[in-house]
Image (cartoon, rainbow, N blue to C red):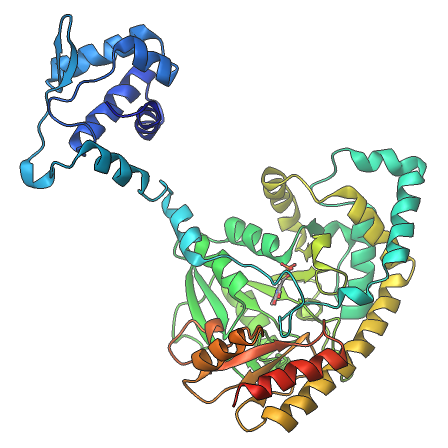
Length: 492
Ligand SMILES: Cc1ncc(COP(=O)(O)O)c(C=O)c1O
């Protein structure tokens, strides 16, 4: 007789909306017999035992057994028990030893929904845990002003307001942080926004997931930059969207000819510093995309993930600020503190057109409620007291120098097989490898303890460039030199 936990699995498998427990049990036993999990002649547990295993009343189990007997699935013999009377067609039900059947059952994939399966198949979005050379996208945590952060935490907790930070908070985020973010974005990025339009979240990934769930229906078209950010592609694909990779050239995303195909519902962009190529979306393209969004009623996501780190002048002002004031907003602006402060802070933000604020706050409230209050309060203080601007100035200086060291070292030591692509900002450099050689070089690099994030993996279509995205920001100049020497040794 199969063990209790299998009976429980089968019973749970038979659940369906509106089904009573007796019908659920009947349905699950019929299914087990049809699928060969219970086979002709097999004895069922007594109604008393099964009732105890499934947490049902004995009357319910008796009633289910009675019904299955009436339907011909079971035969019940007084004093002997209940036996399976249903025989599957022999070719469809190869008889296997009971032990083998149990093992086979345990190996079944978990019963996921279609959406769940899509998410599982899309792969995880994981970032490197340690700043190993050349992990991409990692800021330098050794340079973060920890003593100052500690002081700000202490002050917040010793304040009269300290206890308020222990309770539940607004899904939209602490007002003081929203004010600080809106002020920073207006001043540094040219956004047109107020604190009421800001939604504080845990990460850009949460924002993308939230937007995908709230703005996309199954089968909606989404234009993605090609190559582009996988975290965004995975969020849209999980929502059932149809992704259309749109090539990126020297002016950023190059939209298809007007009228050549149906318009998208949403366009995902990294306009100030395209991920991963580093190009900026030209003004003409920005205007064309805003015009498209206005005409077709589609949304533009502006992921401004690393605009804080531009080393040659200031980045172009945000696309969001280019929208005419009197028109309804089509741009959903996304920013994160993962790079500008530190990733475990788990704070990012969306700036939304006013009509989207309430529905997205509701959606957020049913996801995870809100972001932790103490880090929100401390981040607000860090910004409003001027430490954020000072920290960014310092980090820009450090990173600019590191980027230069990496460019020079790469050109001098491995320039014959690895071609770094100049870029005005960011925490990593894209470098091209000879066509078809990425996999073999990556294997050799991994053998030498180097992380070399793949460039070709960021393409969805068949035309791909081979190369790596080499992170430099978390490494000191001396560490960069050592790491490039290790790259150079791979040639031998
Ligand atoms: C384009 C882009 N957007 C967003 C993020 C991640 O931000 P978060 O850590 O807030 O999810 C990254 C991280 O590398 C990125 O490259």
